[in-house]
Image 1 (cartoon, rainbow, N blue to C red):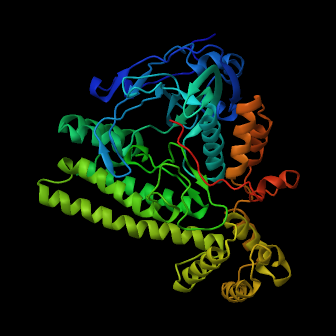
Image 2: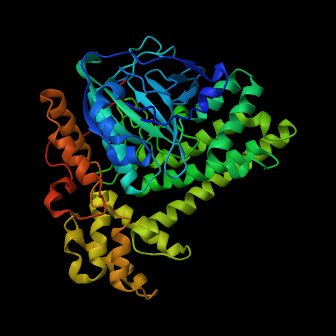
Image 3: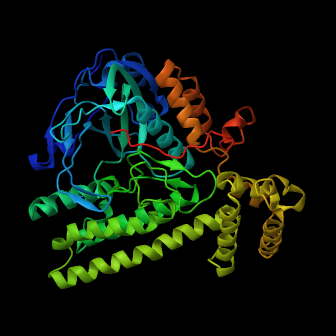
Length: 492
């Protein structure tokens, strides 16, 4: 083994003690590597061949790579609106950071690596099901073109974990731009530690927004930058029918990546009030509520940063409120652009275009039409002869036919070639998403029989979500009778 298997360069570990606690992963009995993301490993500049051979030991935490400085990060957070002053990495251990082949700094973290000082009497372990879910959904999000954490590897541990039932244990190796969260800032704000808050702000800017380092009010510039990235991200979530499920402030990334795929799911039939998470009994994080929750979380970041936002409290509050208010406009801009692209329109915003979008969503909701398949079939319906596939998704074709006539009339006014428009629509409307019932089937087979064939098939098809892939067309189908997933679970 060489010393450059993973060329670590650990900036977070150079911060002072209040930011983290050093802790080593806990060894497991019989680790087996079940998934390794070789293209990602190569992108990170890692020794992919060696890791493929010996990854079971390294990705389980049984063996530490040279240069790793394992630690658990400290943070706080609002969980379902209730503030918890100390959460921290209860089952995640940051091994260190690398500079990838494009010069980007990336975290490498074990999720399920054993207890830490922040485990709060938990076992620090992960069950196989949540590890497979995060692997599939995070990699699908990447292929769909959304900012997201990535999955580098998954290992089964050979040990059980105890939840409502006994389940096989596993460890996920996760890659992220960083694991800085709104809750990281809240941790120091709650303690009144302005020096640490300022140091964290400087670190976050240097790592994610270096162009802001000379700004007269760096913390305010950071708040604006985070607002913009989150407005973009959440608009894109809605455009593909994604429901995060647990948008607590400790799951709200400063980098603008999707992070922490717990009870997440994708819409089948369009329902803006849809909730999957078993712990979201009040619908706080329903599909349609995600933009407003993004704004709420941003307000919590502004509160944490308040001492750094202006020369006095009054001016700081005014500056923060302006950013929070502008978030709504930025989200609307990104959502409008994404949805107009889905129906084949580009150029400047037009009220008629948004009316078309909202009317189509209304028809989909009224008739429980599948979100993904409706938009995917729309490109074929540019000409009347191709509308059959779309109409079969609705119980009553008449209002849909009327909508299609209005839509085609709008298309006819911008002179775009039909083939070009169809290609552009296919590029933003996926044929394949991580269907909830397929993920559950893959998890069930893996847990019951150590059968990972469906998991591997999903890895294959979800790597190319915008291609038709006729041989794998069954994975584009919505759930059949008795297959619909009504609840998803966090796994802790």
